Image (tube, rainbow, N blue to C red; front, side, top):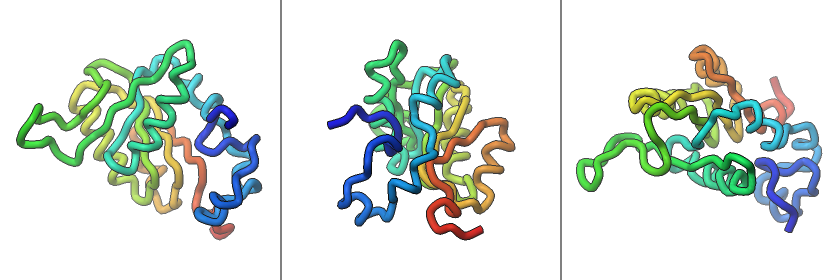
Length: 165
């Protein structure tokens, strides 16, 4: 198996079963930046994570990819609300106050879920330096997040998938 090097590696053909399941074609990702192009823009980032459940598989995959890097990223998850039992934390995993982190989401529409994760991270003393998203639906979410001074890196946009807009 080829080394995982982006959300979808634009240099490796997408298997038919994946295209059949997701409708993502080689042509759709050929110009996508690889994660190896995005992560070096944020050398001070220590961790990566976002609102559970959507961000979890993406954060974990990027964390695993970065394990062979000079400075691997730790992975955390943000709960919608703190549990009232156990450790009672809103952010679980490898996160500490003062860290620069990358927030992840599977889809942004209005940006509400991503902004809630950013708010939780900032409330716990973290500094969000970027947002990585799988799909930007182009309904104002990117602008809302970037309005907070956080650059957004979508793998796909609605128009790149459907050709509209």
